[in-house]
Image (cartoon, rainbow, N blue to C red; front, side):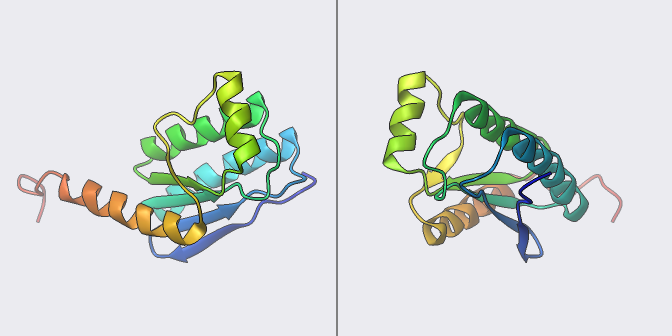
Amino acid sequence: MGVRVPILRLNARTLVVALAADITDDDVLGFQAELGERAAAMQARGVVIDVSALDVVDSFMARVLNDCARMLRLLGAEVVVCGVQPAVALTLVEMGRNLVDVATAFTLERALARLEALMAAADAHLPSPRGRDA
């Protein structure tokens, strides 16, 4: 793998990832696998993916971001993507691609606030532990 994507543990339940501008297709596939493993190992409840360094998002990268969001949701984590540049947003719209049901935010600070709100809402909808071993 050429570019290693840092996956930072913010606290006991949150991961933050920043994709670099020079990330290749092979790098992003490695990142996707590692992100899934890290999220599962720590039972992450939330993940922020910062794409502000990306000037271009092709159809492959858009698909990988969608796949990451789906994978993380299956693992029980909420996902927020932040830092989408205007040119990237326009490209995604022109390609007919969108980030499927992925919450977005302009900045990392707003993404973290949005992630906290999503996690709180998800926690509020959890079934009660009645009927389980106490």
